[in-house]
Image 1 (tube, rainbow, N blue to C red):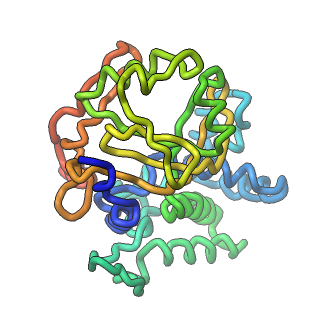
Image 2: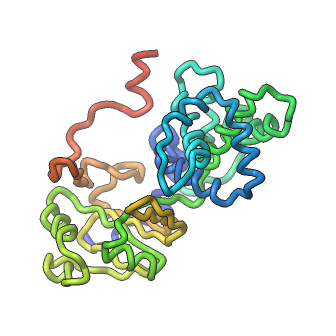
Length: 310
């Protein structure tokens, strides 16, 4: 099936953004990337004020002791980043500061328009959470620990409301792709399936400086209409990204790309317009044993199976 049959971003992303129980906005790494960029743009005065507030946080000492000196960020940047993941860490675990419904607005699905309307719980959703955190932080007489928890939530919710969606990849400076991304200000991610493991491995074995990997594998490069980078025609899932941020992480550089489009073959879609992971059959790479694996079997529903311990 050709890529003219791919499902476009405009059909996929609204579903991802409006189904928070099925797709969390970010994993911890994504929240920390957003927090790192926010901290980098703060003035020294605001950085000091933020850290002063966070020092009253119940987990501040734990974050401080977990920091290991490195050239990429100091201890206060690390604490600011770690605070961004705390609201997820306490979620539905009985913590007095937990607000599980602040992470999203649970809009009902009414295709195809998805018209904007007030949320079903305007007093207990992400917009209310942001407003509440801002109010607490504005009150210098409020309980210090509550203000610290509110700042942590505010940093986190900024990530939960991410617009536009982004994806991050990390590469060594020595790679050919590293230079291409910097030059083109864009990149694509082509997801191979289990049946394309040889082609995927070859792409990792050979540098683009020394040969044409597309010609060798008989794969087809397609020039993106949205970004200055090619993708692999034969791969069923494609993410096209405009370079948004560049973050140096020791020997690696992390490239944060704004997702401009997601293309998926009809053959890997499930009913309702969502990806069916068992049809995509993506590869999993275990670097310690240098082995590729498939994804395995279904084992449980996320954010549900763990409630057996509640």
